[in-house]
Image 1: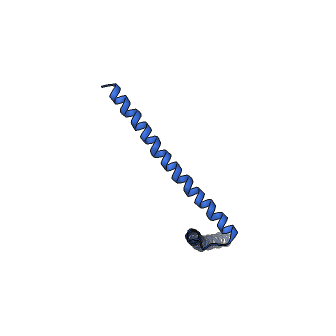
Image 2: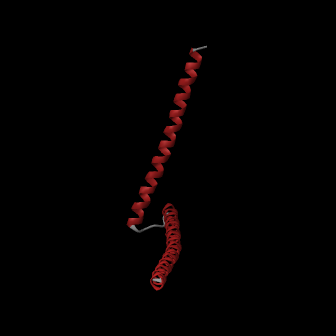
Image 3: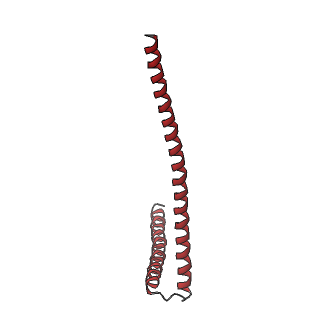
Length: 112
């Protein structure tokens, strides 16, 4: 009977040791994979920054008249049009603000 109890405890002990080793191994795997994913994310961020810098540089060359590639020219024209649209919207914002200020001033004058 004593031997059976020792055998059961031995099996339980081995099973617990295996489970602990597997859990430790899995934790280490997760840690290493997380490090690599973080490095991938950082590299993707660097790529995004470099692409933006390339775009800024191409647009600068476009404004200087140094771009001949038709696809880049078309994209730069789209950017130029967007800048013009933004400028027009900003003017409209100022005009709208002025209009409403004038209305507010007229209301103030009427109530005096």
